[in-house]
Length: 414
Image 1 (cartoon, rainbow, N blue to C red):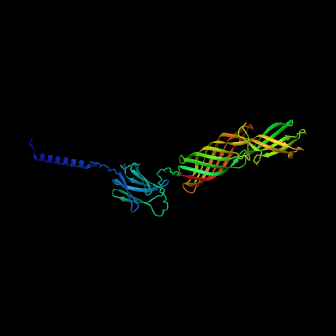
Image 2: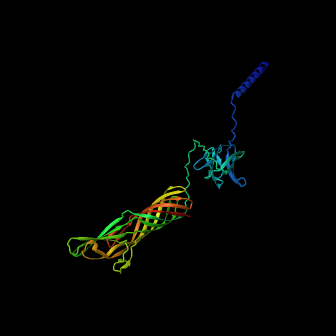
């Protein structure tokens, strides 16, 4: 086939039209997005510190790799300085640095949120002043103690933060303590009586012994050890002057008149040239000028402090003791009488008392309060309740030694 000029012009026209259509289609296609660049991660690298002796300062350098912003605030109970770094999603520093210098106890690090790294400075009781300077690769934090105590800074509490539990430091107490002092004893059953009957002039004579337990002195010594911030325990010894002396009242029949009685009294506490003591039944009586009864108590105690400050301590706890001592009861009574045989004509020639020795377990309760003038020297007031029920064999009766000791004295801790 022979191409003519007309055919050649048609071919050129269609080629030009095709090129225009292809260009228009390519112009309408959206441009392809470029591949995203990898996001950088800021890192809390390390914390270093040094003490500048001349300036009396403690300087901390917190190194951060990558861009960051900081937010600072303080917390109370206990006092802390908090610095939040964002956006920092990785921590390579140690979780804890122990410092204990210029009022800074510890430095702690932690990932507070996914993009927030937190650095916490734990403060001592005397909170230091501080300054914070931002560096290109981190933060400089400087601490120092002011010569004049500064007023407390009102803490800035962020509403999004959970409050931490307050940490109340325990009161420091001496490891050992000694106590000594006098006191008074109140007997909760002050009086008991016992009667003895025997035949005289064909009738029944009665002798009644009355035992009066009056207000008596006591002397006490303690030695204790602090087991923890609240508990203490120890041993003690107590000398109790009992003064439980019998007084006698005899009802004696008349030697000649039936059913007529005379009354004769005798107080054992009074001196007498005809008063004897028998230590054991069947032994020879010993002439004495007076009677003296006493009791020793060796005890162990435990105390729990339910009120405790730097100066005041109030505690209570159980007491278990072992008591031993002496009580007296009448063993024999010798009388003489003259006409007309009235009460005033009857005299006591001699009285023999039996010495009753006892050994008893003595439980009780101790309440103690002390006030410290110095860390080692205090005064104390104590209430100690003891119970012991002593059998007086000669009388076949029990003497109640249920008593309350009120004690005061000096305490020395070491």
